Length: 245
Ligand code: IPE
Ligand code: IPE
Ligand code: MG
Image 1 (cartoon, rainbow, N blue to C red):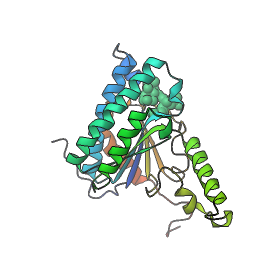
Image 2: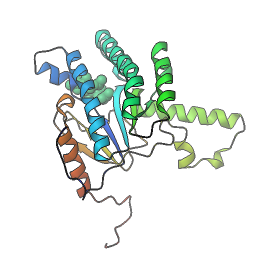
Image 3: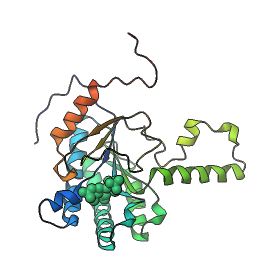
Image 4: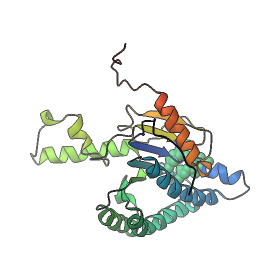
């Protein structure tokens, strides 16, 4: 199945984050409705998760619906939420087959109640799986996540659990939706846009970025491999210097 690749001489990013962009333009280019692109995009997500795991990636985070996406026409928002609802329901079954752990990051309270319940079931049932860790960013905004973390932290301070002096980056990170999930090593955005669109503002502080003009529904394993190869050419210095410098 699939293309045989030899990546044994490459460092495989432990965590890859994807901004799955360009579904609408992909559909439009085919004379179809934008929603057709979203459906195809969700199929590509399933394939890319399998590919990433096969390659050796441990964590995949995907931007599925942003806090700003509610501004789209009702028909598109309804379609997207329903597509995600179905995706999450189906994942309760497929996560067992694939040994995959699924978590949702984002403001869950803003989602329909039945979707919140499906998420709870999926997160609990898949928590025992030791294969790929998939994070779906749903009603997610980086600023919203940071604000929610600050509010929760302030609440804990009011309850005298701890004081401001105890707060460092590790303590703060544990208030984020990505608690216990390592920061992405690589962020991939499709569709030619070179921006973050409010995605993982804290977590992407030192990630490598890979941008491709391809629309998300056209993104394939070979593109993922190409991104990993380019990632390997980067010198990650985290503000320091390499030994030989
Ligand atoms: C990404 O594709 C999916 C979501 C934002 C939900 P778009 O819907 O943004 O497609 P384009 O960027 O308009 O082509
Ligand atoms: C980012 O894409 C959000 C998702 C992929 C879910 P958008 O298409 O919404 O971002 P902008 O509007 O081009 O910045
Ligand atoms: Mg877009």
